[in-house]
Image (tube, rainbow, N blue to C red):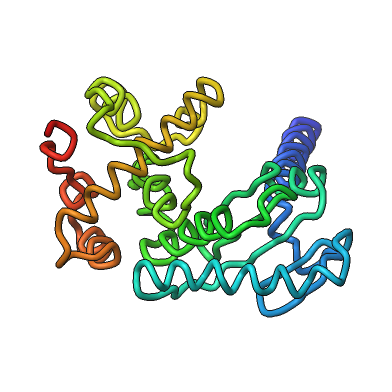
Length: 249
């Protein structure tokens, strides 16, 4: 019996180590405070591989990206931990690609930029994801926010021309594909990012156009007031609705 207990304890210990190792490798960003990244200002960490002469430009970039959100929606209230990776390898180690991504945890939001993400469009996009997570709370953002809406909102401060599209030229089948599977909202980002580069760009284009239409059809209702309605108990699908005439005219 003692040997069996020891065996079970050993298995549990090994499983715990595997889980902790996986968590560390996938979310190394959680340990950024103990890394060799340079703390440029509050919550802004810069890879030691990045030359000091570029630190000022990065600081200005962060300020400008936050200001773009403020100019668009009135305020920026979150304080995400921003990690600027200097190489593709460092970006991957901290859970992102060459461009960037945002991750929310129950206690904090993180934005990681890769070496191709040092521009205001990418950073403002990811910072707005962090702002949404901050305003919605972890559970709502993680389990209730449809991916097309999350990405479509982020695209409202991303002005790269390749993501602009006339939604009236997109057929209803494509719109439904981006929003749902078997009439159920899509929450898994892997579905949104699958299908090749052309398909992914189209997904972003459609999401951006849909959210733009939603926000522009009622000038008395801002993004943040709509978010507050969701926090008060209304469903995303009831708050963020599109007037179908926008793409049927």
